[in-house]
Image (cartoon, rainbow, N blue to C red):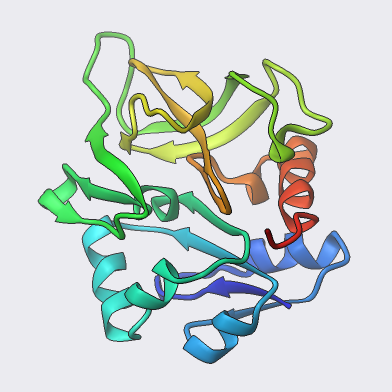
Length: 198
C-alpha cells in the first residue's frame, strides 16, 4: 500500500490516479497507523509551508514522518517541508534535511511563480533517474526552492539555478509535479514506487 499523506484539503486524486495507473494500490490518509504500515509514503504539498506544517501538527505526524524508514517522496511544497526552514513566513520545516528554502529571485524576464514546463539536468545517477535523461521536461508550479544543496541530484534553472531533485538515504524530494509531467513524470514516479526499503 502506498500512503499519500492528505494534509492540504485539496484534490490529490491526480497523484492517486497516477499511482493506480502504474499498477500500485494507494490511499489518501492522515492516519498515523496507516502511514506507518505503508510500503512507500508520498508527502505532497499545495499552498504554503506554514499551513502544511500546521496540518501535520494537527494530525500528530511530525515525529512519525521523522521516524519513517520506508521510501519517502516529497512533492513540490512537500519537498520543501523536508528541510529545516523556509523563508515563506519564516516557518520551520520537518528538519529531515539541512538548509533553508528560499524565494526565487525576481529577475527581468522571469515571472514568479515559476509555472509551466522546464528541463532539468541530472548531476548523478539515482534510482529515480532510471529511463530518464538530461533535458527531459517536467511541470513546475512554485515561488520558493532550495537553491543548492549537498544532496541535490538534479537541478533546474529559472530566475536562478535551483534544486529540482534531492536524495538522502530513503528520503527523496522533487520540486516539480510528476503526476502532471506526462510520460517522464510517470517514469520517475514508477522508479520511486519500485524502490525497496533499505
